[in-house]
Image (cartoon, rainbow, N blue to C red; front, top):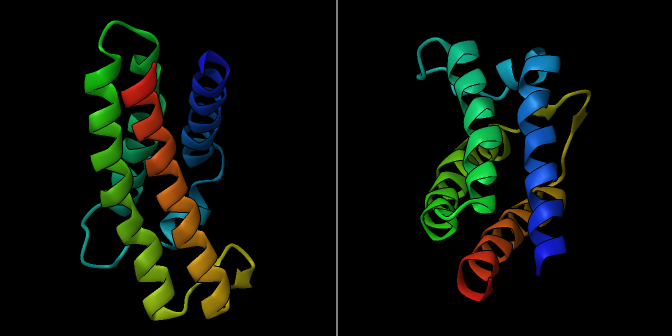
Length: 119
């Protein structure tokens, strides 16, 4: 279980860093009703780095619950891309690919719950 937690934390740290390395990708998927899109997605990237790191501390349970809520909230950007048929980078996903992307998000939530429940 420790290996799963470490892999999960590393994955999300890298995903969070990508908000700063490749900001144009995220600029394009922030819904237009959200003000200051770059600041918002960079803050999201910061949280993607910070919250999982707390899974390695005594606040693991609290961090896991916060991460579950966070994952549900940020899926809204992916849902926006799906509904508006926007590209991810240079490609537009089919409905099936978006469905798989949603399943992956559910998997992230499930893994977070496993970390919360069983470690």
